[in-house]
Length: 103
Length: 170
Image (tube, rainbow over all chains, first blue to last red; front, side, top):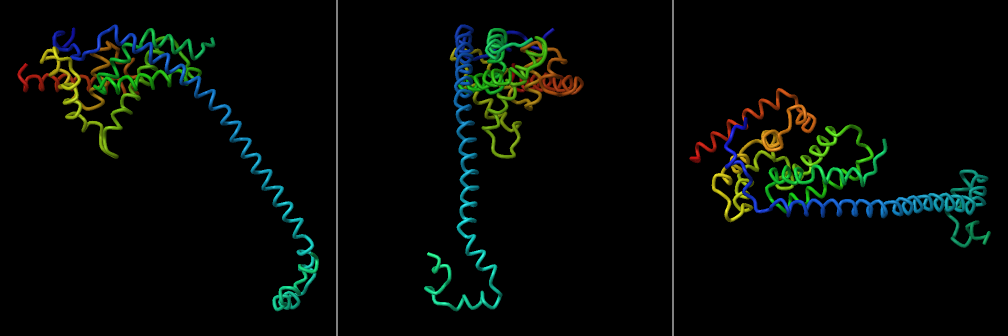
C-alpha cells in the first residue's frame, strides 16, 4: 500500500520511455567504446612511461659512472696530497693547477 | 564463471538502464546531469565488471550503488567545499519547476519539490523504496546503512512530504 496518490507521484518531466530507452543504448555504447579506447591508450602510455623511466635510470647510472671515471685521476692526485699541499694548491695561479697539466 | 565486461554492461543496460536513469534523474533533477551520471555509471560497470562477484540481486544492488554514488558526485559539484548536500533543497526545488514539462500537473511538480526538501539520505531511501520498490535489505546493500536506520529515514521522509504538501495546500 503506497502512502501517496499515484496521480501526484508521477514525474513531471518531459522525457518519455522511448527517448530514455534510446538514451540508455547510446550511453551504453559510448561507455563501452570509451572504456576500450581508454584501455587501448593506457597500455602504450604505461610502456612509454616505463621506458622513459628505465632510460632515465640508465642515463643517470652511466653519467655517474663516466663522471666518476673522469675524476678518478684527479681524485687520486688529491688523495695523495697532504692537507698543507692541498691548501697550497689553493694559492696557485690557474695555469699551474695540476689538473691543467694533464690536458 | 567468467563473464566479459561487455556482457555485464549489456545486461545492466538492458535490465536496469532505464530504472537507473530515472533513479539518477530523481536525485539530480537535471536531464543533462542525469545523462552524464548514467554514462559514468556504465563506464564504472564496464571497468569494474571483472571485480564483480555475485548473483543477479547483487548485480542490481551493485549497479544502484554505483548510480547513487555518481548522482551524489554530480550534486557535490553544486555545493561549495565543506558544504552539506542537504543545503541543496532550495536549488533542486527550483530546478524541478524548470525541468518540468509545460503540461505537467502542479501537484506532480509540488510532490517532487517536497521530495527535494528531504535530506540526501532520506531522499535516496525514499526514492529507492517508493519508486523502485526495493526491499530494505536491498537498500541496505546499496547505501550501507542498517535496516532500522532505513526504516526510520523512510518514515520521516513520508512524514515530511505529507507536511510539505499540507503546507502548500494539496
